[in-house]
Length: 443
Image (tube, rainbow, N blue to C red; front, side, top):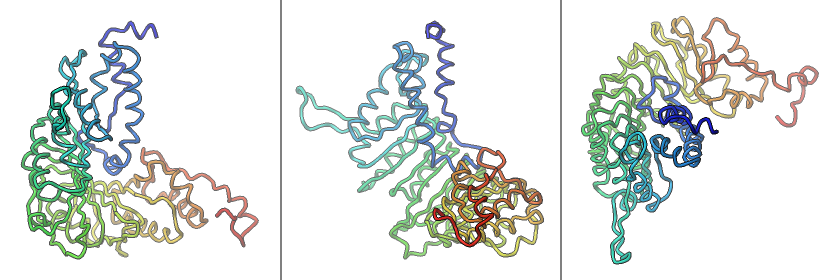
């Protein structure tokens, strides 16, 4: 310990940088399609240990706190209400005596904004009661964003009970002032396509957008209300939700102009979503390199059109699907797709015997004749294949997975990290050798 305390400021700073580095949460976007398919579900779990390390380092001594201050505030979020947000703002206003020399807000690279009551959580409000003869002001998220000029990522979660008429405009103009902002995640029940239009106008520099668009009976929030133009965006994750408007048949989206788009995730809630999104597929698909179509809803299923890949995505290299929620054409494509290299599989937890049909559909449809460059089937969910395989409680499923893994004529099957999948010998194999009429009770 004495040795590390004697390290010069610069070397100690490098040590702390290595110990507290979060390579995923602070990135503007990702080039790995598998990571794009999973990061939004695992960020808090992954960043927890990093936060703990930063906190522990800052409590060792004043010197360590000074050196680590620039890393301590890189990623900020607040789960509490008004008072917690206020004190977070006060913390960011403090001057940093370390490397930056400015206030701590200049070190922030990511802000997660949580809105539960817009009037309370967003703006600075003044307490009507007097405190020692003076009115007391409470800062909100709007003030925090004004203190973070170097922020790269903003994640907005709105859980509002009511929506003021101009609330999104206030948020968007705050984002506009952040010149280094490159990634926006916006989830909740309040944003619609008109807000995405404003975002594209006010923040044209964004390279990564993940957004939930909520349907509305207002014509300005309809799917065909705008043609969205995003000149720099490379990654788009789009969730269109028709909650409370399921009885309305919305028109298809207009074609969008996103010339640099490389990855597109579209959340599918019903088969009708393919009709809504067809103009997007046609306008964006020619230069896409990866596509993810996750299916929301436990019992939702939809059918992949027979000419879907060839007619919309001629240069697609990675396709990620929910294996048990998409129905494939019975006949493989007549014309080979000469770019697809990686097929990503999302597997649900828990299995049933009819899952064999879905697995076999994928095996037959994505064959080497139709997809001659297909070299890898990657399990992108769950992160650990063992979490799925331990639920294989039928002999048929185990045998089928063994045949998949040993089939040298098909693609190589790997886990999320790219390592070959291995299937451990089930404990019930020895029992089966002498007992074929009954199943073990625990099955």
